[in-house]
Length: 167
Length: 394
Image 1 (spheres, rainbow over the protein chains, first blue to last red):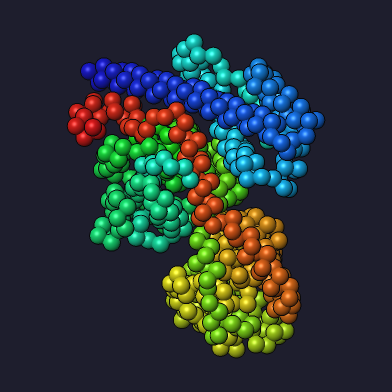
Image 2: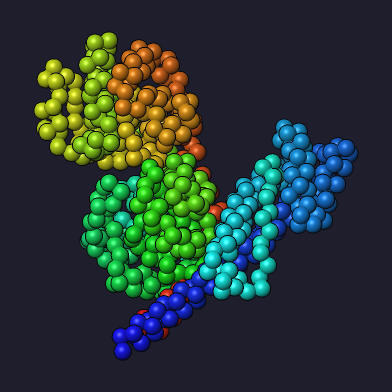
């Protein structure tokens, strides 16, 4: 009798642990997706602001050209080249920002303020996304997740190393 | 801050009635968020339910347990857990902000019970400990539910990466800079005075290091006086002090907020000889804002808060000779002392709540991406159903 109770108990605990682990992994996958969507959205907004700055009067034709090209590259980049393209845009924005902060009209100042707010948000968003990806990959390495195929058919998230100078 | 008004639930792991850094931080943050128009509810253990501010909900009486070398007033157990679940289910929160979720208390329970946007703040800094490594695997799946982790200092962040292998964003603790800036110089506290504040009976606060340095300082600066503020038995301490020094030491007892600002503005040098166990050092930020010149031990938390010596002067921790030398130098050089104080006061703006709360709020926005609010976790929901307590979980 006790054996039966023991076995049933063990099976129940194992089943609960499996369902717990599956929920845990599902939550992580979900976070990878939402954090990426968020980051992507922020980066797109940054590219849009860059284009707007490029079209403003303050930008000379050369820097305007540089900025426009960089912004389009960042928008069109495939996920593999994204980090590189975004650093390019950061560089172009950095060059221009130094000149623009000196004497600019209220409208442009507004634009620059928005840009710096956005930069702070992007920094946090990158941290969240990279953490989610690393976590998910680490958890999927564990034996129990492999043996019971708890990941199902969800693709392994790509480690998306942002270069340090992305901002 | 954006117009959207949020419903924010904050969980405090320590008893609300006992004064402490975490409680003070949560109180200030909650009041700031409320002043911005958000709805805030703080869940905390409390002994006396009637003395709580309106935004604090009691989860029951705290239990005193020894934890991490000090007595922590925490709360856990089945009854507390059901209170937490009830609070989450009824709160309809957009976001939960859990403080110290790695401590066995309410925050950990809330992190276990809830699902959705959650932010965790880690305050403590500890040395490498086997015990924390041992509980790591248990904490991991729970801590993982936090969308964003905040550490209040580099020291706290370091503790977190070392023990739980997870990174955090550093956002400092906040102070109301204006309150300290308005501190008035009181004649009885000015002159060649050294200020010390804190529970002076605790060895880690390092008052003994300062007392050892005092005889040497007296030899070079004959009119130096030491003002000690903070709770404790002064008579016990005085017995250990050299009788010749006693007349130079004044005990002020616990100071209220106004007196504290005046005290920090008046003293010639604020001394923080702490030997360790500090994660942030909020008192240094307050002293800076009040315009005090600071001399602090070079423990990690203080060194990073003082910009490695830019906003205050560091001495070798637990080295009373070095402390004496530093104090004598500064007491004799008024210009240098005032220069450092001025740089520090300017720098203290980064700790202002306006700035700090803005950073915390943008973390909230990041955590809420995905759009769902806070709800009870599915795993605890099925438990409630199994235990036939569905009504309670609703």
